[in-house]
Amino acid sequence: MRNIQAHSEVRVQVGDRTYRARGRVVAEAAEDSRARDLVYEKYASSYGGDLTGWRGSALPVALDLSGPGVS
Image (spheres, rainbow, N blue to C red):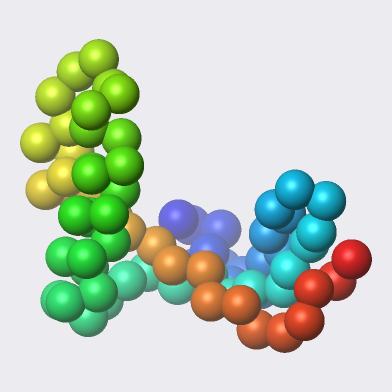
């Protein structure tokens, strides 16, 4: 989180492709809620513990692609 605040330009690797992106803390309420829901729904059933507390206290960040793939 601190890295994103200090320098928001990042590279994200998915498989063998790398993309340029800009990281940011999610601030808009609807996007924040959607991000929490998506991550919770993805991991809650396979996680051995209770993610309810995490869902309410986590700080969502987003990576917005800013250009074509680097490689």
